Length: 510
Ligand code: HEM
Image 1 (cartoon, rainbow, N blue to C red):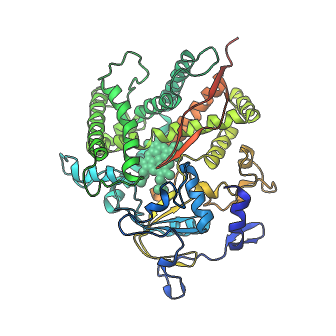
Image 2 (cartoon, protein in one colour; image 1 turned 120 degrees about the vertical axis):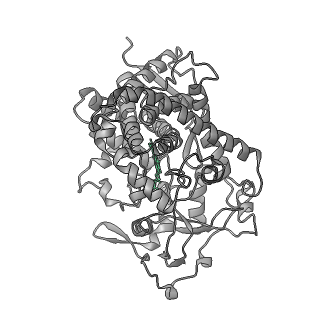
Image 3 (tube, helix red, strand yellow; image 1 turned 180 degrees about the horizontal axis):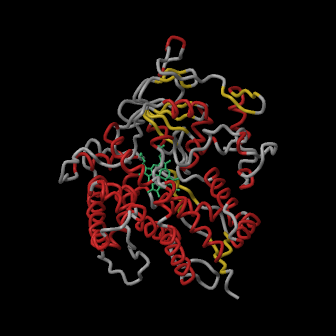
């Protein structure tokens, strides 16, 4: 859907005060007075039937069917407006889609001490009900899947380890080494037209896995080793991480009956979750043999794994597993998006190359990354399950409802970012008087790493990996793209799927 159309739908509910936009009809509070609110069931949305919910709207011929999954959210907005109710589909919860930054601010800011974020239900099920717990931490499953006090206990313990800039800085050299090796690998795989003779997405996943492996296990996994045996733990881990995202997407984000009976996908997923845990343990044990040799290391030189092991071995296993689940596809797809936008905007790519070569600043690099996350974010929105009642856009929203804030749609609206379809990293550096100045947008239009105490714990690691990799790319290649734009599939994250029409011109080659 194009921006002017979105604007015409939104216009009636926006008011402008001194150049800043405010939403006129939102308020939320601890004790919501429901008397003047419209009831929940009146929230617009597709009709639904018992058990299958609104499924018929999604199949070919249905009002919401779209061959391109990334158009689905915009279609909902176009048909129903800034708040849309999707009734439960099979065993799933009711989902509200909200296209309004002020509502996002109100809900995200006023959630309880322990916000609830659903999703990854199959992984949560495995960890709660199938996994064999060998010790006292029976209830603990991980940051992605835990809720309530268990989540809070784990999160507050690992925050000082994973969010400490000094600790993350310890990985700069290793992350740099991995990125450099990837450059050499890419060069060795280019054909005479400078096109990669390997699947680009697989290559990016390999690089992202090798990079996060350095943090999670404190050792090199050697994913790039061409002599890895097919049944080696490294090869199995590569395959397993890839499969896990795929399988959970099928179980948790597409219609599935696994809640009712064990479907073949469910059985496969349970095996993969188990395999991934076993492999995480294998690599941690391998790393521990190395760590034990340096027992007297000062605290400031200890990496993530060592610090977590000091706290508790179980925490180290859990966090390593979560880092692999959350930290590979997200980073790999962010790189794909950025390289595509560089290729389509060669003058911006050159400008950044000048900055990179001068080694004096990272300002434009950071602006390019932000602009990519605005235009092609890897996570399209943020999700919360309400832990209290709300007034959202004049409707009464009870406790226990999943609410998704459609940041991707919002950040492509002219209302928030002028010339939204153009890649303009300069908007992030512009001053207040510039019409492009990013600060004119509501602060909750974009939230690529989520919000508050539940936000992405891997943010600093992801930023380090992305900045390092892009710097290497610009030092080595002039990136081009030929043919039609990439296909993007929207599930738990936005997946770039082939064909990947990149051309990597080696700038060091005479
Ligand atoms: C560009 C890359 C990444 C993006 C865009 C991203 C984005 C996100 C988002 C939007 C959330 C949900 C936040 C919320 O609900 O408020 C999240 C959660 C999470 N991310 Fe990331 N992420 C990225 C990379 C990583 C990496 C590299 C790791 C590994 C260290 C990681 C680990 C996690 C974990 C464990 C959670 C759950 C946190 C919790 O619920 O306490 N992410 N991420």
